[in-house]
Amino acid sequence: MHIFHKTALRLLVLTIAFFLAFPFMASAEGRVALLIGNSLYDRPEMSLRNPANDVTELDIALTELGFSVRKVQDADRTEMRAGLAWLAKAAKDTEMAMVFYAGHGVQVAGENYLVGRDLQSLSFDALERSSVTLSEIRKVLSESGTALGMIILDACRNNPLSDAGVGQTGLASVRGGAGLLVAYATDPGNVAYDGEGDNSAFTTGLLKNLASPHLDVRLMFGRVRQDVVRETSGRQIPWVEESVLGEHYLVSPPDSNQNSDEIVAWRDATDAGTRDALDQYLGDYPNGLFQAFATERIEQLSLDRDDGLTNVQATTQLASLDADDVRAALDLLGYVNQERGIEAQPEGLTDDIKRAFEVWRRAQLVPDTTDANMLLRDAARLSMFLAATTAQRIRTDTVIRSSIRKHLELASVDVAQIRKFALTSEEAKSFLPEVEADLDAIRQDYERVAQRLDASLTYYHKLVVSASKHFQSQIRPDLFWQNNGTSRSGLVEPSLFEDAAQFVRHVRSASSRAPGSYAWLTDFLEQG
Figure 1: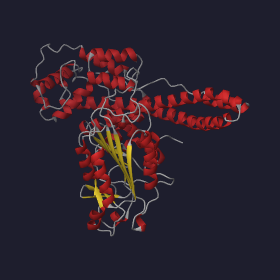
Figure 2: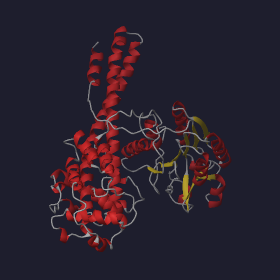
Figure 3: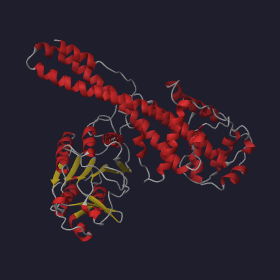
């Protein structure tokens, strides 16, 4: 039976051995979801292909995940409000409560209107009479007491309203309250795609990732974003606003005994900022991506804080700078941490921060020639090194994930065929456990690389946001290879130049986009 041996060879591929671990935080019981999909509008030119399909498939997927679901299709304002009334009661003190809307949406004066089937004319009065607003939905979820409220909006399609001057294209970004996550199919003011198949590009990504095990919902939406960016060639970039407390899992939390991925270990070590935490990172990853940076931080921590330091120069030099920028720079460079008893939260130029600046100044080759602007340049340069290093792993893991995904798709088809043969063939039946085990191994390899990529993208995004907010005026390409001799990380490897220059572009473009944009992700699209 040559076909079976050929299948086995195809299945026995790739073993990638890195895990991420995320602690689980328990919450209340119960899951509810209100799904609204408006495809058929009274105005024929507004009808859409996929919203009804989207909610039908989400109904099945969420029910399998333990949600109590109410589905509303081709609804007018009255029917949508009735769905919200059901949700207000059903969501009381639940673990999770979700509202999904697919259809037309438009923003007017900062408010988002989700358009009902019964829109009669292209006017604002008609829009108000036929729509529910995002504010109404947020109010219901905020008052429900649910541990996690999710609003998912696949509602940024082109429509005649915006063409007629009623509102703007796309939806407006609105920050959620505590415990609330708002996911948009694309970034503020842009258009999402209804899709050529049975579902929109966004809902396709959502359905693909909803049931991923051991994945916090924020990371799950991160994977949706990656899939949509890839499938639309960067034309559509999903957006998430959240103030979620703790971690929440749609499917089984991770095993607390799993080993952290290196990016997570580095992030945790630098957040703690202690010798023990940094030594632990070096012990786990002696040749890791951030080995040189960890060694530098340990050296910084060994400096004597009480060796005649004064705050006189710090008070003078820091006076012209924003206190948040100074604190962010000292935090990134490792001078604000638990070991030194200094909090990272912005609290102005306290005496501790001034002393930390003096510790940094003394560590320079010629302390008397330093100034506060040099501190920001030092932090900007380190941001570039960390980002370029992380970018290289993103590129590697993006290729690895793509390769495993292709093998997984082929293997899944083969195993399905063998299962079919096993119904009538004893030889196929005896072979089935082996190929299913191989398929499971490929799935596990894919998940490990996907988790590693999650961590890398999250960390890179953090560096983009921080640099854009605090060091944008200092960051420039030539800063990357300038070396003032104060740090081991100043020795540049040529392979990092291109990714450092790309990071500069990402930081600069971030200022022209809504805060937190993942538009930079398009530069990491898989090639071919």
